Image (cartoon, rainbow, N blue to C red; front, side):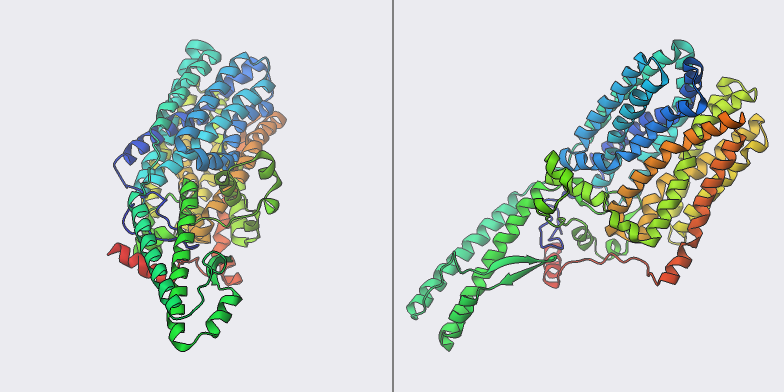
Length: 588
């Protein structure tokens, strides 16, 4: 296995965790993730085109019709923990392929919709589920292949989202004009099926243990020879040999440390021996302890080999450069060791009832348990960040869905109105690149950058009803698209700055769930406000204010940290000194 991989904090060998190559086939993985973002996000964020068609075809209210558009991204986010569990068990490739098939099936079933409520399930829930199964592996696969170049690789992959929005908004409009909305949906279902090829590029990293197995066999043979020698020596000195199977020290687990428990009768036997035999007896015990520890370690390594899914890396959702993490800069090998350890084993009778009923595999249980640990909500800082994300998610999809229809109502042509979504998309791509580059600079306060960008988005949205001229709306779309890229691109980075790397998976999983719930209700609320007032102005006022509040409230985090006495999180490497020495030896 890769040089420098040692043992985890539980004493578990991390040789079963593959070494990211930081290149090679990883660039094809980036390509697959990029194209998947182009297709999936491009189709989801261009829903505003279909929204106008659904309004005319089904004759429903704007509020209830908006449910179709809000269900797709809402379900996509809400199934994040489920997608992570499946990815940890079956890998990125299989989950992505299944997701593409499910999303395409949802689009195809939408062709038979007799009413708008049918679309809630087919276009909204089913397609959202498929996109959710595609979205998470697209992020995880890139992180699995890159460490040093992760920020650059992830940046390329997620830029596909903005580019896809830029492309699919006019393409969807062209398809609708040429083939009606049913023909456009069918063609886009075929495009989604091409994501199967993108998923096929997510080739899993393979771990080979031939050298490790040979080393273990050789070490085991040496220990056997030493035990035989000790047995002969002790018998020749008149010392009764202790039964190897019954009285050997047991390796017991206490908390997160491995300790040796020596049976009391062994201790009594040691006490009655004379000084000359104590030496041989002690050496024999030490040799047996070493052998037993080696066997226990190897047993755990075999467990680790069966539990080597990508979700066992604590930094799998971290999209920034790893050089920003002090532990990685000081010693990359020890850093890798600290974030690739097995979770604690929970007995079945203490595990979640749902896990026992469904018979989920350990990999799926571990992933869901990590992402849905609600005890993190006791952290005031995370609670503030969660409330902010809920507010942002309420207004996030508003411009994508309603801006084209609002422009058409003000006398702008449908083609020009659709182009406003394309402007959001291309500005989003530029914003992600620029703000991603800034976030990796040591002189940038990433929390302040994140807060300010959200605040600007909110203010721009709230002020957008001041004018209905087309140049003004193009300017608003560009500002919103550029600054809203921070919301997606820097979330994981800011979470690590606030909570530490050890809590990232847990925090990210909970955020996905709350973001999904907030996305459900955001667009329908705006539609109901239109139905009640006859204008989109109030909807944009409310959405913009909520997003601005989401950014402004995070300015209080440094003050709250100071009041609570919180220090910046430090993810210390939780391994013992002997293991550190072993790591140094392996690295040499």
